Length: 587
Image (cartoon, rainbow, N blue to C red; front, side, top):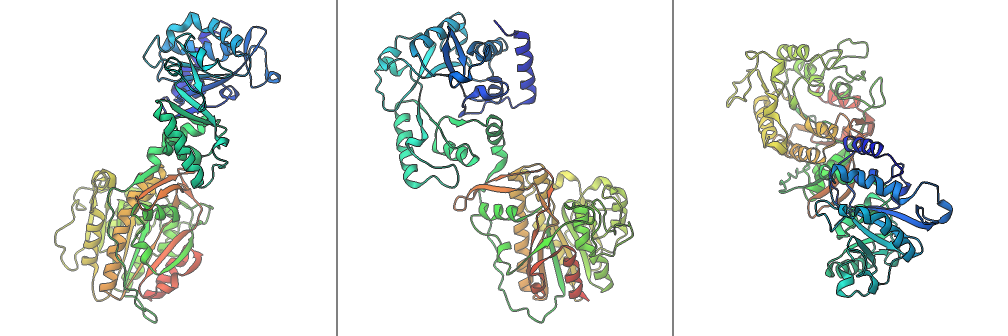
C-alpha cells in the first residue's frame, strides 16, 4: 500500500470526533474526489453513497473526470481503497455504496478494479453483512447480459431504458438518470406541476422494480434537497457534503407541526378615537420577530389572535452602544424612554437611574404588574422595576423587586431570593391592596414542550383580577422563552412558545373588549436567531425554519395595538417611542 495506514487511521479518528458520525440516509457525494479529503469527509458525515470517477491509463485507475485532470498518485487505490480498508479495521459505522464511475474502457477498467478488490473482497457486500460497503460500477459498464457473470462483490448502476433478466437484475441495486431528461427546474420555488408528474411516474416505475433511484445533474439547493426527499428519491445528489449533512442533521430541530390548534379571539374593533386608556397591557415576546410570528400563524393553521389587532407599526431596536441590542437595552428603551448600553438595566448610558413606566404609573395611583415566563430578575422584566449597571447583578435586582412599588410580579428564579421573602405558588385569593410576588423554581417554568401547559394564561388572568381597579393599571407580561428557543436554534421550542404567547394575547384582547378603557400593545425587544422560513403548509400546520445566528439580530420588530390610543403606534419609530407614546396616554 502506498499510503500509511497509521496516517489514515489518525485522519479517520479526527473526523469521528469532529464531524457528524450518525448515518444520514439518501445522501450521495457526487464527484467526491474534489473534496480536500476524499472518501473520509463524506463517510464521516454519514453519506449513503460516495462517487469516484476513474480513468484507466498505463495499468492504473486514476481518479479524474477527464485525462487532463490526471495527477500522479491520485488513484482509486490511494484515495479510496486504502482509507476504506483502514476504516474496515475499526469497523464501519454505517452501510454505504462506493459508486465507481468508469469514464472509458469498461472491460480493461473492470479487470484492473478486480485486481485491486479481489484480495480484500471479504470486507465488501455480500461477503460480510454488518454495514458492508457495496461496490457499484457506473458509467462504462458491461452489457446487461454480461452483468450476472461478474464477481459477487461487483454491482452495477442501471439505466431506466435497459431490460434485465433475473440474474442481471440482482446485480442492479439502483437506477441513475440525468435530471435534465425530466425537468429544467433550477432548484428555486416549486417543481413545475408537469415535471412533478413525470418525476413521480419514473420514481414509481423504479421502485416497482425493487430498486433505488438517483438523478444526476440536479440543482444543489436546500429547496432541492427537501423536495427530493419528500418525493422519495432515494439518493440526493450533492457536491455540498458538509452543507447537506448539516441540513438533514438539523432538520428535526428546524421543523414543527402542531398536533392541535388553539382558537383565536377576534376583537370587536370599536372606534376608540378621542379616548384615552385607563389600563395598559404591554405584551413583550422576547426575541419575537416577523418570522417567529408567521411560523406561529402557519403552525396554528392560518390564524393568530395577534393578527386580529388592527394597528401595526415597526420598532427600531438599536441600543446606545451597539447596532444589535440585547434584552437589557431593548427593554430599558421601552420601559424608560432612554437608549442605553447593552447589559444596562433601567439606567442611562452613564449608569444613572432612568425612571420606568411602572414607577410613573404608580405616581398616577395606577396599579402595576410585571410577569415573565422566565427568570423575573432577567433583563426584560427587570428593566421595568430595577436600575442596575449590569443585567448579571441578579441578587441586587431581586432586592429591588422586593422593595419596588409593584403590586403584582410573577416569574421564575427562586434561587435569587430567600425562601421567606417570596411565595413559590400563586395564591388562590389575593386580598385587595395586598402585594403579590410569586417566584417559581426554574423547573416549574419549563418549556411548553416539556409540560408547562397553561401557566402563562393562569398567571395573566390572576394579574388582571388583582390589578383591576378604578384608577387603572399598567401590566407588562413577557413571553420569555421565545428568545431562549432562538438562542438554542431550536425551532419547535420557538414556535410552541409563540403559540402559547398568542393564547395570552387572546386573553388580553378579550379583557380589552370587556373593559373598553384598556389598551393592548404587543411587541418585542429584539429578534433572536436570524430566523428565516424555508417551507410550510398552512393547511397542515407544518413549518420549517432556519437560523443564521444563535444571537440577536438587528431587524426591526413589529408593534401591534388595540384599544384607545392604538392609533399612536402606527408607523416606524425608535423603540424609545413606545415609552413616550404610553406616557402621553397616562399623563
